[in-house]
Image 1 (cartoon, one colour):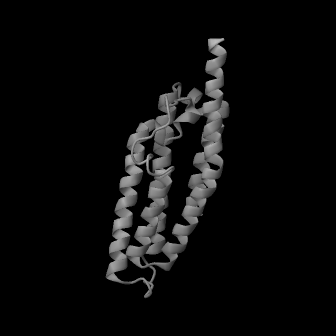
Image 2 (cartoon, one colour):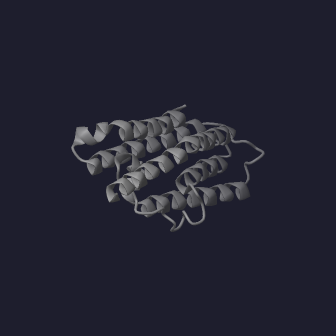
Image 3 (cartoon, one colour):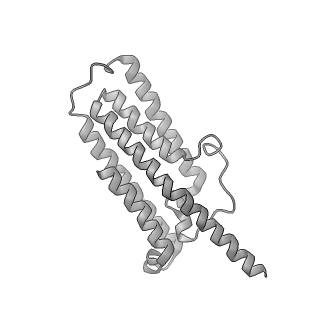
Amino acid sequence: MVASLGILFSHQASRYEYRTSFLTRLFGSKKIACAVFCCIIAILALFRFNTFYHAVTPQESWPLIDHMVIRTIGQVLTASGVVMATWAIVALNFYGYGFADSFDILMEERVTSFPFNVFNNPMYLGSTLEYVGASLVAASPTGMLLSALIGAMYLIALHFEEPFTAMIYADKANQNIRKEN
């Protein structure tokens, strides 16, 4: 529930910002507004993981996956997810993490450096790997279920996010063409 609310909030708030520039007007600067939004997203992500952690840790371990090899795989998945998500944030720069395109802070071109040259959505994939890895480390069936739900939420979010982002860049290209004519 917490995961879906944070993800839903991020996407809906970014769309609202794109249509109204509410936060940009409130803070008087699109970069300041985007930075505040980035911080809100980061806080929601930390809250989501903390809630996940507290749901998973008191659970009795699942004997089927309570094995040292599985725990090691979980540690590798968690570390890989952290690296992938962090590297994606670095590749996008700070503002790109917070739906910068909704604040009219657009990249000149699509990011194609690692991890974007390997995965289309490395932040979402990395985050999902973190949850799956933590579930395996804890040998938690609840964690596995929650990880699947979080992964599903990211897939649903992408269903809306990718066309919206494409529309933003198409609108910008059309504006540039009109300026040239």
